[in-house]
Image: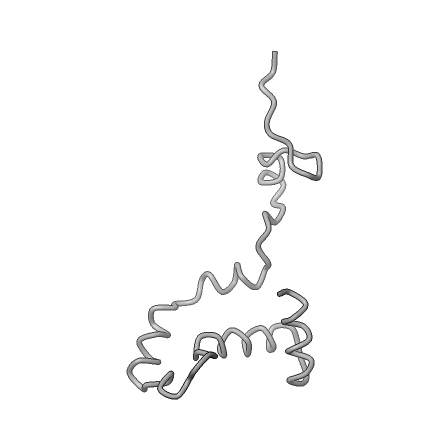
Length: 88
């Protein structure tokens, strides 16, 4: 009689999760970063040759790490590393 919606692993349908505003797998940090002007950032990096000596860790990666550290009140490099590795 009623068409059933697909169930997720938690027992609620995807539509119910979206209606109540539940996170669909993305962290709050990734949702915030989505609104940053990545193209403008890359223009500045290219203009000042910011990635000139970078081998593995780009300016964008460093910016994301520092933004994460600032937003999560990290106090040391070891604290930043430990926290970032917990999400890997």
